[in-house]
Image (tube, rainbow, N blue to C red; front, side, top):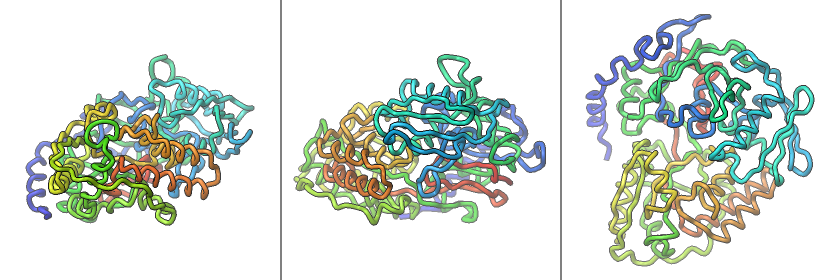
Length: 502
């Protein structure tokens, strides 16, 4: 049942807390109301997730840099999830996909230097050597070599037919040599290539960016961006409601009904919410109990009541944002028969950074209790949740994941999340049939045939009941009435660009 009035009142109670949220000069940047050089107004942006690694380009903070228009790599993803030109204007494969030759466009770094093959080689080499390794390079031995005045040859230990997709990952962004002055890190301040220059970082609360007039893609229309990191979803919504922010990402669904509908935009994303079941230890090591949990869950309730229409019921690991997936879906075979839970106690864990997840966990608790389980919930901050989830300390986890975020290749999500050596394997799944299906798909270069193989691998994962797809999430983003050109990216890598302005 919806309770928009109560949510609206709760939101208003928090409004005073936001006074001065974008106050002039409070982070040392230009006033958000100043025109800046060349006319126009600075963009005020409210981000949902604060930086946790001092804007290191090799971790999750890389997506913040990408969404704010600071960084870019050799390639980017187009609307269909295909590799498109970025710093590289063309490429071709060599030696049976073991190496690829990329031709660079004329571009400058934000510190004034030229984007040269040598600089690109340095950037890719440092990324390949980073510890922990960027997820886009998991299991890949990547090397790079300068070729002539404007080309770079990128090689892998084994054939990699999706390397151009892989290089679109924000963790593989290219920085100027100055960024690598210190051996123990990368300094992204003023050293990237995107349309906006990161000028100042204020801890994990704010960042100031200015327009990069020398951007290869054209002069940005906004003179700069003032970003605030506001983890509390109600506070972000209030910043939009009171006119203190121009663009607000990840609006809590509970707040959407109380906002001016003209300021809320929606779009399907490649982000899913799933229930991962621990297949290695605890009660869900029993396939019959996993099947019982799957059969007890009504995903339509989650889409309608929790997301209030801003999600669709789970269809699989790959949802409607990947428009090719539905026509290629394969029915899972060989699933276990459900057994009676008979009061089996299980713990479901999730994290609070996405406010819908604890609500989902509560609904699942009710549905599974009704089916005969005895469910305990544990809600943590994301930083405290992930390590224990990956260590298999919970019976089940409610987890949100953009399946295209690692490489732009959907197979990467299956390899990372559901294979024996996967680095994001919360279900602790290690199944020979799954690993074989993923390995088979990895060897296919042709796009259509690879998609077929990916969906066959998806079916092999679903057959284990290690994961229950819950919902496919839509973007709920707040955009002020005076703002134009916000990038509604289904892969959640882009948000502001050269045409974003107010």
